[in-house]
Image (cartoon, rainbow, N blue to C red):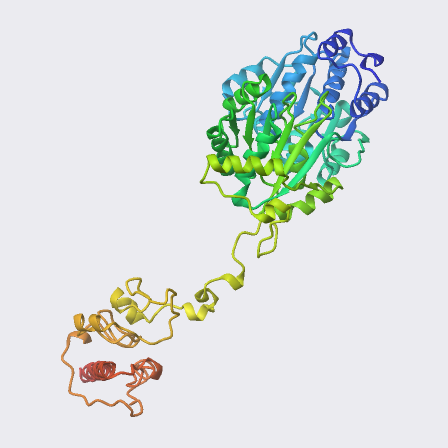
Amino acid sequence: MQFSQFPLDPRLLRGLDLAQYVTCTPVQEATLKAVLEHGKDVYAQSQTGTGKTAAFLIATFWHLLKPENHDKFALILAPTRELVVQIEKEAKTLGQFLQFSMAAIYGGVSIERQRQSLLRKPRIIVATPGRLQDFINQKTISLKNASVLVIDEADRLFDMGFHKDLLRIVKMLPAPQQRLNLLFSATLNNKVGQLAWEHMNNPESIVIKSEYPTVEGISQHLFHVSRSEKMILLLAVLKQENPESAIIFSNTKAGARQISLRLQRAGYNCALIEGNIPQKKRLDIIAKMKTGKIKFLAATDVASRGIHIPNLSLVINFDLPDDAENYVHRIGRTARGTQTTGKAISFACERFVYNLSSIEKLIKKKIAVTIIDDTLKSIINDILKDNPDQTALSEKTMAGTPQKSSHQGRGYTRKPHHDRYQHEKKYDHDKRQPPIAARSAGSKHNPRSPKEENPQGTRKAYSGKTHTPHSDRRDHKHSQPQDRAVGTGHHSRGETKGSQHRTPRTATTRSTSKPQRTNDHSRSNLSTNSVRTHDIPRNSEDQSHASYANTQKQKNILNFISKLFHKEGE
């Protein structure tokens, strides 16, 4: 069906002709029939690149051109800055003869300029929820006059955490019966469905079915490759495919930066888009990609939606995305609009290969595994000659064998339990702190001190024995044995502040006798055999230290008893 068959304003049809919009896509035809002919709201599932932006813009223009809506405006919500800019640009193209004022509201740019554009009361506002909420809180804008609400990429809005902001904004609008409501989403979930039925007026559900939820015409290929080999394979694939333009997606900002730098070093005109790139620079990069000044783009998932680059022939997933839906949006950058064909190549390494099953489950298709042929092998060998620092491809990669790691789980990067060091298997009681005396005596008397080298290379768990190097014993002849009941410069448990400086009475050394009971205060902590048997050293020198410990302990006991008798005499 053609656009001229709908009752559209001649000025709008003129703009469509100049933009070369002649025949409707399925989602455009279904949306315009529901809105223009039946006057209904629309709740549509349509994949990226199917023309849904033009569908809701044409319906929005038609509704605002009604005489009763001459003082109303339309609000279009989108998840990302890039998508907001793209929607505004397409709206200006299609409605260039309608003379509608427009405003794009998003973060990362001057807020004062956007405030001034809102004060001029534009007829169409395209915004991200976060920045729009800021202006609402500042009372710069009121939503009481909105007659159209469009929510684009609703699933992405929820994924990015805009659920609460979105609900607050919707509640500030007029009742659903007093406005036109259009909701579009690449995928449907419970939150999107709940939003549609609670805040829309009996919407008509539109589902554009396809064999699988990726754009037809995209040839999908998969290489099984190890992480260390992906960069050399990327260079070889780009040299073999020789695309006019390409986007290479990475799961991380650091990965995207590495790809960009490596391609620039190899002579490719490659730019970078990731979350830390300022918005102004992002828009400049996208504009240069569209004009052909930049041919290659390394990006994270911030570029997987809302970026339309004409004649983009190749998309490479350097990393398989953790979210299967992002795979659909990534490869949807190619084969868009009038471009009927495109190619997507993915690298499955041992870290992200576990994402493959969920992706194939979503697209309902097995991605064809590509085996490296002789042509690609020769290209790889040529690159290796020029770049000897690169890792040569293994036999598994050449044969297309999956790169499986020794551990299981999606994105699991830690060592499994059986690969840990031996000392990491100890239970918690083997890692307890040394006795108080050992800690207070300083690092030389601490058996776990980092100064004491362990020739085996593993840390020994504390066993309760006190090991002091012989050299340390000579340096600290008067240091106390390391036990909880012995004072080492600090006061022991049964010792008073004044007792440690007084001269004790004579005492005999008892090493095997039963503890002598004195009174209830000293019974538990001041017994003469309070040194544990497994703490007693085994060699002759250690035995002398143990004897000295017992003597000193008895002196402390007698000192304490003499103090008690002295107090009683007073």
